[in-house]
Length: 171
Image (cartoon, rainbow, N blue to C red; front, side, top):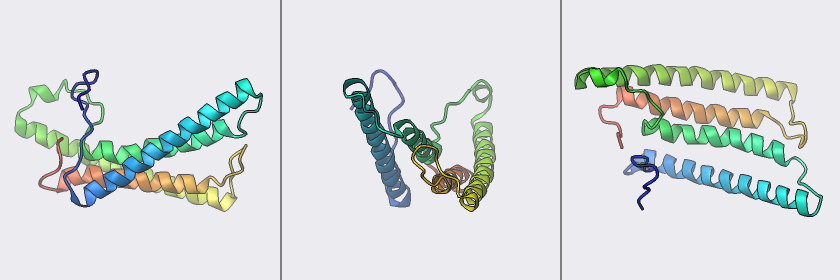
């Protein structure tokens, strides 16, 4: 299926193996979250404006789901190196230097994501120890922090794979 609006922004797919399985799981999670968020918002708006009965906690549930959605998409974007980039410097570099630059940036990104994942996990542990709950729905917040920490760690591994694996996807 062609997308003339966003040329060059096709959804890349790994060919097989563990990477493809993880992509399928993440794609399913992202699609499910989007459908759930859309359903909550639609029912909330219809309930609010037509029946004067909005869904209690709709805004808060969408906030929590959006946090997971963003971090669920991050490993796939990282694996396929589809982040927004500025190529002002790289066009002046030789192909060998571009590869070195790419690997250095992947290393820095991977290490930063690992550190972020560690602190997110620690934050989740702190939330769990305090018993922090969401305001409207009284949902425990620690599981959300743990899920986001794990997804960030997967993103870190995806970034580091571009440094250490001899052949990584460029699609």
